[in-house]
Image 1 (tube, rainbow, N blue to C red):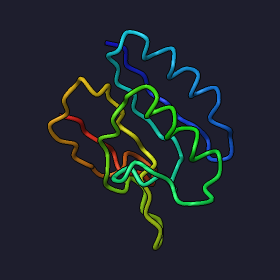
Image 2: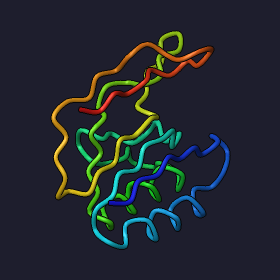
Image 3: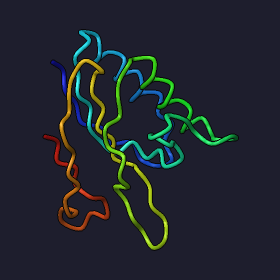
Length: 117
């Protein structure tokens, strides 16, 4: 199984990360965790809102293309009144995840820490 951790700064295009994801999933079994900074994607419905920019469309398309499943559905960043799922837990669809707990942020982070069981 291939595993990787990812961080995409909010204003950068996801092209390089998406290309890496395509390479990482070559054997069909993978786990990718990280802050993808795609707040507009509705991971429960597996869609983005009408008019979403390519920063949202690209990652969702690649996740679907690679038959990955996004397991983290609780907001991982809560700032003032805004909540978003920014930190993703992506597994190959053939792998099972029992539970994801969201722990308190580490250090000075404003993101919760996902714990995968």
